[in-house]
Length: 219
Image (cartoon, rainbow, N blue to C red; front, side, top):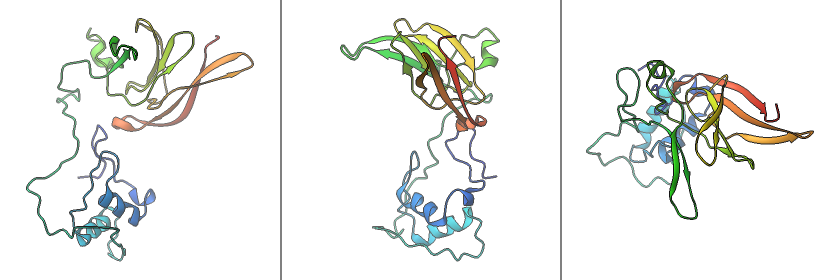
């Protein structure tokens, strides 16, 4: 109701949307869909215009929109209501399914067989109670070095970790200023190799960030 979206990010915030998008851009998202959001081309042009006016806080209603390649005019009624791609959490904000809730998996591409799988991420409150790491939702890929290390952030607990490529054993971890929902990169300067990760956060209602953090492998 307050336009701030859902805690897991499945409904994005509408706060200050007029500073991010033009009215026509919002109209095209409604008509064509984007990412996890489906198209609402079955909604009439007038109804889409009313939605755009509402979310853009345009009380005058003078936004002029034109439908592009629309094949339907909103005459049909759907016998159901789509409420979004929702995740199911308990009252404490944890997924209701059995852990692990996020994993890192190694697969042999020659045989197609799984070599190992480990939880990726943890909820600190559960770990303090003696519960083994459960894994978390994660967005981001790994970086594999020639020495057999896997570096990956991705988890909502705002950490970056290094795993043994052969066994999946965690070898190192460090805290980040915000969640690293990205894939790490590597570069070298004067013989020293560095791993860098973008700490943007923001997804899954984690705090946003604007920093890049680099780690030196030679230290």
